[in-house]
Image (cartoon, rainbow, N blue to C red):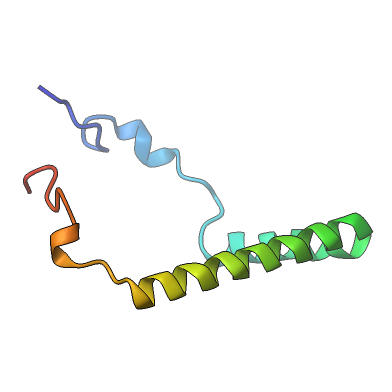
Length: 83
């Protein structure tokens, strides 16, 4: 038997949430990246190369899924938990 851990079974889990969520965390992340791009020249090259690699992977995945879409019969275990 599996005991699911929820806020009802362990009320202290509800209090363990971070204080930054959503837009506040995104603004802090953008500010940190901006400061690093301004302060560290080597970070600029790392950032540019990372963006280029990410765009290439996104383009490859887009084209792959456009020309070889997943068919209904290719998906196995659509309901692995039987829900």
